[in-house]
Length: 127
Image (cartoon, rainbow, N blue to C red):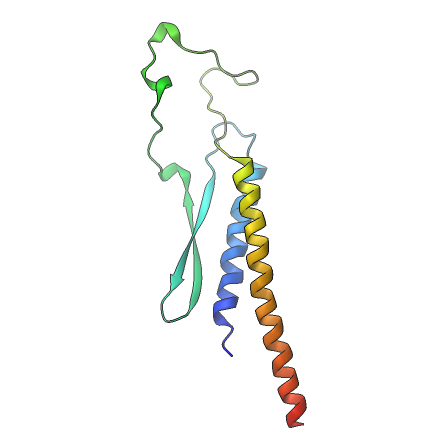
């Protein structure tokens, strides 16, 4: 049984967990742009690989604040100085991602553990 797909998934979900933890750790940093990890399938049943994508690569946000007349600008939120943008980290999304990562990591670890147990049993039968 080939466990390379499960091994690559462990690495990819570990990277995804690191990115989510980094985003949560920096959620109170002014101007922080969270990153995410996109998972890509490796050809020929080779598993999965993670690719870090920074949200700085996303286009500038547009909306009502960008088109307001200068006299009607809102005051900055309490605790933020004028001209500073708060972090765009969505804590609910990050914790949901962390729970998904935990489940996927556990499932792939179970595949590897089962493979090791089966190999041990086969060796015991042959001995």
